[in-house]
Image (tube, rainbow, N blue to C red):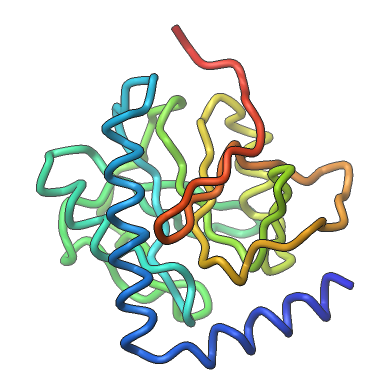
Length: 191
């Protein structure tokens, strides 16, 4: 089922026109910025991903965070794990694992165990389950650093009724869609 769903969602992403993706990414950006202003916990830094192969776009979000002087970190694959590194501009980014843009070698490790993590995914459901690409990188990261608030970023067609779950799967607290937020679970927040 996971393999078929991954294939179906990837096909949907390939059919999105450049204009439609741009429109959705603007709405996603606006929704996220509104949510960040309204959140009940302080945003000290944001761990983000750079979109790849039709994922929900993050470039505009990244630039807005830089403009507000909010520290931003991006993931780098190291063996079977991902680690986040602080990036201060586009010059801190280079092609990495599977051609995905990553922090360059000179970037400093991010060390904010309460940073908001904006998570990519192939699909999400209303219980916070996330279907990734099968590598388990984010699941292992959240086991290693469980205190992070975690929000999924997606387009509406990536929301499904119910995803199969494994015992090691780590859930997100909410999913941000273009123009909509789906709150899926509450976790203890730091005071």
